[in-house]
Length: 183
Image (cartoon, rainbow, N blue to C red; front, side):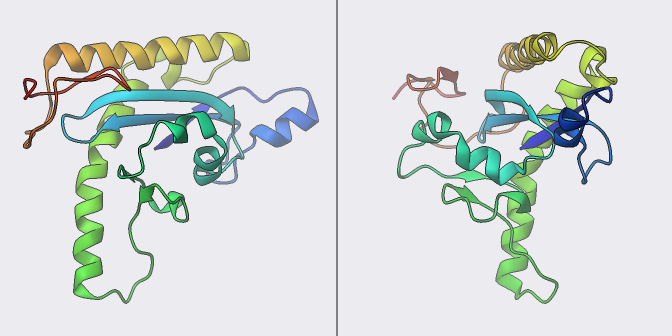
């Protein structure tokens, strides 16, 4: 999921135009946080990106990250990711059949895990929770350190959620520790 980092209004009008988000009505740069769905551990942080770029466009243009997804793997995303082939999303509309409503509830339930970690990342770190007034490079470094700190904190506490299935302890592609011993 993508999330904003609020920044001060730049003096350069062209940069200001790239950072003024219509959705948030503020000057922002955006970060993206990915989690391993089962245990809820963070597995990837990317950012910051310019604030006007849509979440699905951020995903589709990051070819290196998309290459890490195996053909049989899928991600869960909010409605902003509709149209991304590797991402399962909710159905849009108000007159949905019972199965589509059930699907939407399931997606919302599991996507909440990512929202919990984004809240942990943003709310417990004053440097990211307040309006950024420093340089872009320093924000990128602080955000990356904060994301890794949340990842370490979550791994040290163990899985937040019950995990079922034959998951390996360590996935060598992304270096994520899972809740079950190697089979």
